[in-house]
Image 1 (tube, one colour):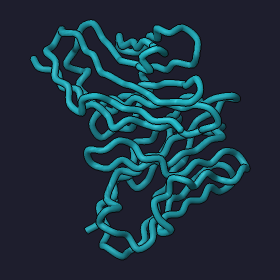
Image 2 (cartoon, helix red, strand yellow; image 1 turned 90 degrees about the horizontal axis):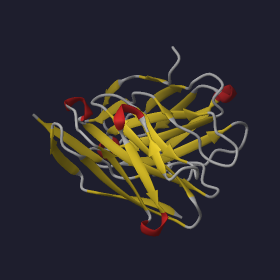
Image 3 (tube, each protein chain N blue to C red; image 1 turned 90 degrees about the vertical axis):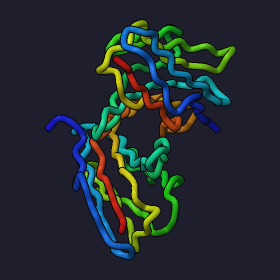
Image 4 (cartoon, chains in turn yellow, purple; image 1 turned 45 degrees about the horizontal axis):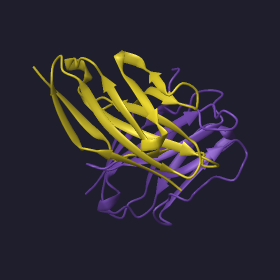
Length: 113
Length: 116
C-alpha cells in the first residue's frame, strides 16, 4: 500500500522568502516520488521526480526536493518565492507493482507582495 | 496538438442524466489514467489502461461509472444517472509507462462536471 500526506493545505509566503512545502509518504518498497503543480484552470504539470538516483532532485522554476528515507519525506523547497509560483502543489508516490500515482490532498501556495 | 486533449472542458447536466467525457492522449503513450478532483480534495484515482491489458478499475466509485479505451488511444469515461456528488473536475493523463516503474504523467486540462 502507498499513501501521501501533505502537511498544510494552505501556505502563504512573502515574495522573496523561502518556500517549504511538506510531503511524507508511506510505502512498503522503495518509492518513486513526484511533485506536480497546478495553475488555475489548468492540468497538472510535473515539477520534479525522484526515481532512486540522487536524493536531491532539482526541478523546473528553481524548485528542488530532497528524498529522506529515514524521515519518509520528500519536501519541496525554493529559496526565493516569486509571485508566479502561486498555485496548488501536489506530492505523489508510486511504488512496487502499482502503476498509478497516489496523490496527496494538495497545498495551495499564496505569495504575498 | 501535442498534449492530452479533453472534451468537453465544461459540462452542466441535470441529476439523473448520463454524461460522457472524452480523452485523447499523447500519441504513442501506452498508459492512460482517469482521476477525479473534487473541490478542496486531492486527486482520486479512477481507472488505468495499459496497452491491451485488462484495465485497473479499482478506483471507480460505483457501477454508475465506466470507461473504455478504443484502439489503444482515445478513452471515454461514462457516468450514468449522475448525482450531485459526481460534480468534480475529471482529469485524464497519459504516460509512456517506463518498464519497472511509473513514468511521468502528462495531464489534460480536465473536464469540469456540474450536476444540478
